[in-house]
Every structure is written in C-alpha cells, then in structure tokens.
Amino acid sequence: MITVPLGEAKNNLSKLVDEAAAGKIITIAKHGRAMAQLVPVGKSQGRRIGAMKGKLVIPDDFDSPLPDDVVGAFEGSPT
Image (tube, rainbow, N blue to C red; front, side, top):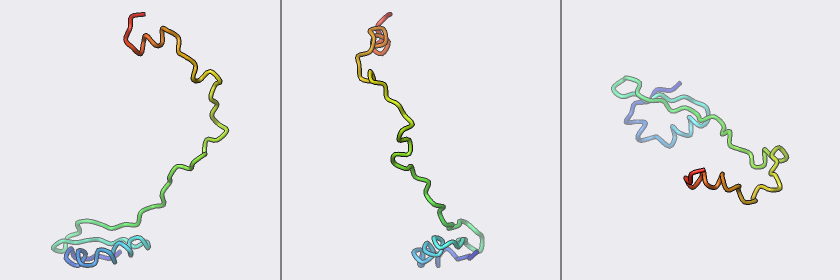
C-alpha cells in the first residue's frame, strides 16, 4: 500500500491511476490523515449476448389480439 499526500496526488493522478489499475492500493492523505483510496476495479461481469438462446419459448399466438376483458382492464373500462 502506498500513501500519497493530496497535493502530490493531484499532480500525479494519471500515474497513480495506472498503478492502481496494476493492482496497487494507493491511499491519499490530507494533512497526514488518510482521506481516500485508489483501488483496482474488478473485472466486469457484463451480460453475454445470446446467453439465453434456446431457453426461452415465444408462443405462436404471441402477437394475436388480446381478449376484450384484458384490453378493458388496460384502458380502465368497467368489466
């Protein structure tokens, strides 16, 4: 762990970010007191496109008109 005064951190932020990205933890201190830390970000767990392929079934009548009572419920009409 590296401790850096705030003024030095302001002047060398880009370098410190690179060091944090490389796995180091950098503590930024103000008047000798720790105020913040730069830490490496974990790997993104983004969604994979097509991860559900073959697991979802869309019925053949998916886009057929809704029954009148269901349409009425959406439109606020009395049943």
